[in-house]
Length: 209
Image (cartoon, one colour):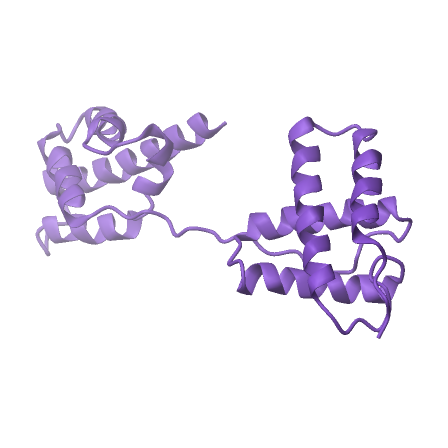
């Protein structure tokens, strides 16, 4: 078993080096904190074939085990794990070993928020009330509804209107089965709803930019 180097000295050397780096103060604090946690974990661990603070292969093994420890024991989020690994990159660059060979975590993407049945019904009824020849009234209503309804938020425009196919099925049910006339109010209502959905998505994209 390889004797581990002085972790207290390694922490002090790293913090002195970190002060000279062109990084934001918050980043320096996070790096120093993460490296302290890593060195404490390293000192409490045992069974290293070589010193992880001096040997490149042992460095990689320690970084991977630390990543696993953060995920399993600490239940850390992907962003927290990746920040800790970036801190280890800085530590090992300071020691002349280069970045550890360790995989980053992929961020977890939240599923789009779907409209509830009540909200779908509200949107459909508003489109029915709109004039078949004036779909812009439904477009304006759809955009306003997304922000003024209880719990509405302009930031959620894209999420609120991600269920276009669901709307299409509802509009098809509103139209009589054998009605194929171009001027049909029901058909126009369906088109109005599609345009309202497209308008809301465009508004969401514009606000995001």
